Image 1: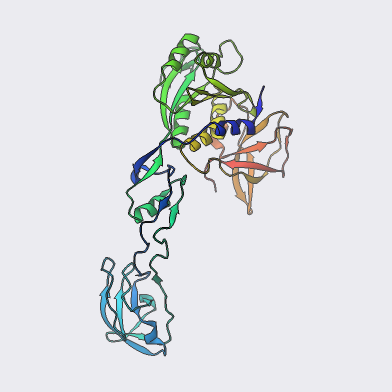
Image 2: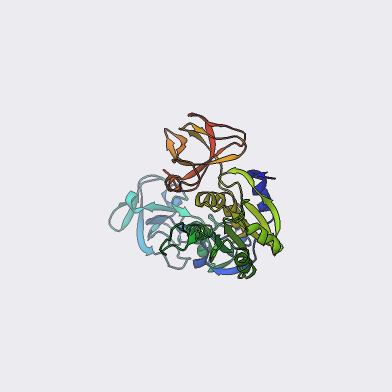
Length: 401
């Protein structure tokens, strides 16, 4: 019996856990998830330093205004902290340089008035101007990043600034891809009558890389029980398997029977969603197996909705589902009730609101619609569609303006 889209997503995530951890150099950490929290080993900044190029002085020397301060030196970024500022004097200082002992404020060059070797201050100066205090960004012992944090450039920059050259992250999932079908040939090969090029393997490999996983192509397998049995019995060392096609109810749909012969635990088959109805999911030797439809549109849509979140959980990420947003629909879109409708849409901002319009023909055989789409609208299972002006829930897949 078919289950709902929500039940399918929950079943998948409930049966997965994060992969083991490894120490990884920062250069290879982009997009990965921290396996343990990171605590700051030191204050940042390590000392009071200047936020501007300018002059360091004691605000108390200028309490009465109309003050002349002798400029008696310069402090550069990279100089050791501890330079003493004498009362009644100022020091030139560069951005990032340690603030001299006794100084408590900075006057930027562009605001400074100079005389012959002196800094002229005509009004009282507040302490603390343009001074970065020790530990004001991060204090030693602070938890800077929590376990499961996705490492973006800013997180990697923070780690490097705190002196880390490597951290503990979760392994990237190694995912095997198997396309099935007598009609399939590899891209680049000449087509004979009745044959088509296999687009799923390349699309799945690209989607896996985008999700931070490592794709392992198993090539194309004919719709033959013995061939499928050989292919699925000799899997390499992997963390998950994706198959495409061969999971409906036809006489050549042999993927599920072969998996059953190999002892897989099927957790669901058929999902009340369009496209993607014949999707199946189960465990083989405790490894997740995602059986996707052979139609390229359906396969990619189900990958985005079900497989990508699963891979993110296996990779240790805290957030595995993209946010659901509200958008005003700009087209009348009809559907039959009974399945959740996944509608490829173009999402944009118009007059301060999020809007979505159909990206084109929604038939699952029309791949070109996916080229224009940057999001998916969700039409409720029981609905017959939406009309112009209705508010729908959307997930954005790509950047948009």
